Image 1 (cartoon, one colour):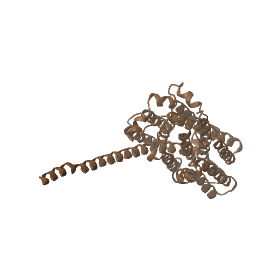
Image 2: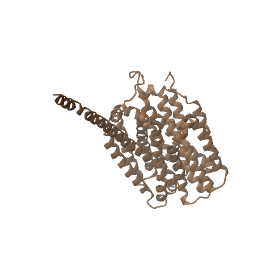
Image 3: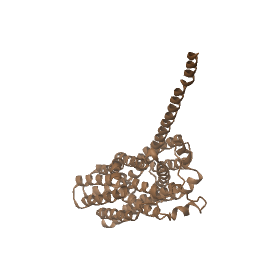
Image 4: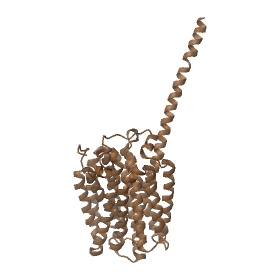
Length: 433
């Protein structure tokens, strides 16, 4: 009898640890699947930023060829930057209502799909007014996909490390901007120079397919729930006027938007005009387009490798240090008549300016309401993109009168203005916001 009782006890207790092991294994498997899905989503978003960088960095090396083909001067060719920016602003404004009406998944695919139209127009090398319309459409599309991807990553928390991922997301922009000049410089020397946009078209097509398969046109809260994240409730009343009013009354939003305007304007001005400066002032040859590659490579490296230094210095302090050092290097380009020295200094300026944009987005995540974050980021990016038109366009107008030598003092002034604006950006969320 004791043996039977012992056997009965063993039969009761033996399966228990097996069940526990199965439960733990199942839970770990679920976590692994969730983390894998999160990484796939993140790669899809990085691809959108790669395409944005590719788009923005294409223009510089092609600019002298566009001027020659269409027989236009600095002021007229600068309409490229202007129309691209107008499209970006329109996209950033519509992004707010489209996010509510269509949701994240459909809006981001709409943005990428717009690029298919823009690149198709540009690839055919139509008359200049039509060619410029392609830049408007591309600006619209880049605005939508940029706002959605940055807003999505800004919603990360916990083990997903939103600050680091934001840095890598925008490092992908730098990667696209790195490779684009390598390719566009080659096409600028070919008879069928506009076929460069066929490559851009292929990249946009694969991007649209990738986003469609990964996110399945779902809303942001559904996609985040799939990876175990729930959006925070910031306590902001949902019935308090419309979202436009809620967003545009945020003081911190406007400071970040103006900072973005000057930063993006400075970045695009360097990328768009530095090749012309090097050719005309430093006596560079046809391969001078690679200097633009060095600048955007620096942006990528800065965003990917300086994350640890941003944290050690404090992101707010790091911005001041980086911009001041960048001003010093820009003075070298301005005052030292060396082709090699200018090329190296421009690449280092890219490294120092690289972290600025993702840090600004991280700041937005900390000081702006989470329920309005995607709309706010869309406006910061869209308003910032007006800088990509105003400042390069202004540079072109001034260069048509004073010469391209005026580029460097303009860049130094823009960087100094960045320091001033950043000093007024609040460190934490205001109660009034």
